[in-house]
Length: 490
Image: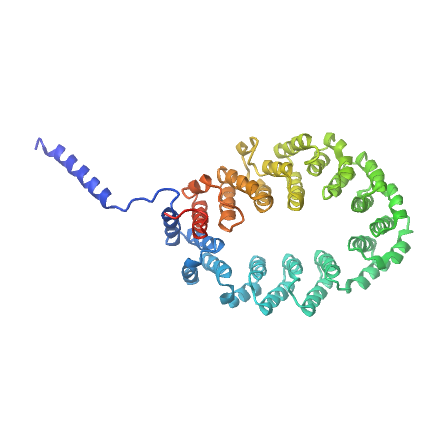
C-alpha cells in the first residue's frame, strides 16, 4: 500500500491530460469561430434574456445566414424571445411578417405600437405602411399619435391629409401643435382657419400660442390678423404677435421687440428672444445684447437657449459674458453655443455641469449639444459630448448613478451616429472600455448595425466581456465584419 498514493496521483494526472487532449480546443479570442461559439451558446442558453439578445443581435447585424434561427425563435416559450424573433425578421425578411407587424400596431401597448411604426420604414409595402401609420394616428397614446406625424412622407396625399386632420382635432395639445407644424410642412392649409380663429377669439393662452405658431411656420397671409392683435398692450398676446411679425419680415416690429426683451416676465421676453434669434441682423444684436445682461436668470437662460441653435458668430459672441454668469444654467447653455468659438472656457463650463448636482441641466445640455453636433459636427462639440458620456478627461472614472444613464447614453448615441468615421470609432473604442456595461453594449451594437467601423482590439475583447449581453452583441458585430469582408476569416 505504500506505493498506492503516488500511483493514484499519476493516474489522475494521466486521465486529466488524456481528457484535455480529447476536448475541443477553445478558439482563440478574436477568431470568427470564437464569435460563433459565443452566439451559438447564447442561442441555446436556458436563460431567455440571453436567447432574446442573441436573436436581436442577429437581426441588427444583418446575419441572413442565421435567418432560420430567428424563425425558430417565433415558437419559443418565452414572450421576450418571440418579440426578439419578430424584430430580427422585420430586419431580415420584412415582407414575411406583415401580420405580426399588424398585431404590434393594433396592440394596446405604446412600446409595441412605436416598434411597429419604426419597423414600417424597412422596405415596407406602401399599403401596409399606410395601414401602420393610420393605426398609430388612432392610438390611445399621445406619444404614438405624435410619432405618426413624423412618418407622413411616403404616404399618398389623401392618407396624409386624413392623418393630419385627425391630429388637428386631437384632445392632446401637443398632438395638435405637431399636427399644425406637419400641415404646413406638407402644404396642407387646413390649420390656418383654426389658428386664425384661435388668434382672434380664443382664451389668452391659446391666442398667444396661435400667434407664435403662425410666425414659426412662416404663414405670411396671417400678417393682417397679427397686426390687429399686436396692438394689444396688456397681456402676452400682443408681444407674441409682434414677435411673429418680426419673424415674418416686418422689420419695424423687430425694432419694437427690445421692450419685450427687457420685460421681467419670461413669458413675454421668450417669444421676442426666439424671434430675434431667428431673424438675426443688427436689430437682433442690439436687443439680444440687452437680454444677455438681463437681471432675470430665466431671461438670460432663454437667450442662451435660443442662440444655441444658431451658427452665426456675431450672434453667438453675444453669449461670451454668460460664460462668467453666476447661475449655472445660463453659463452651461452659453457654453454649448460657444463650444467651437471659445473652447477652453466653454469646456470648463461643461465640466462644471457634469460634476455638478443638477441632472436637469445636464439633460438640457446634452440635448443642445447633440442637436448642434448632428447639424454641424465639430471637434470641440464632440469633446463636450465625450465628457457628458463619461468617456474622457477623467470623467470615465466618475461613478455613474442610474438616473444619469439616459443623459450619458444620449451623449454617446450622438457621438456614434454623427461625425466622421474616425471620431465614431474613437468613441466606440472608449465606450467599449468603459466600466458601464450599457455603454459597452451601445458601442458594440453600433458596430453590429454598421453605424460604426471596426474599433479593433476593444471589440475583440468585448467578445469575452463578463456581461452576457455585451459579449453576445460584440460577437454578432464581429460576425458582421467577417461576412462583409472587413475582417479576415479564420
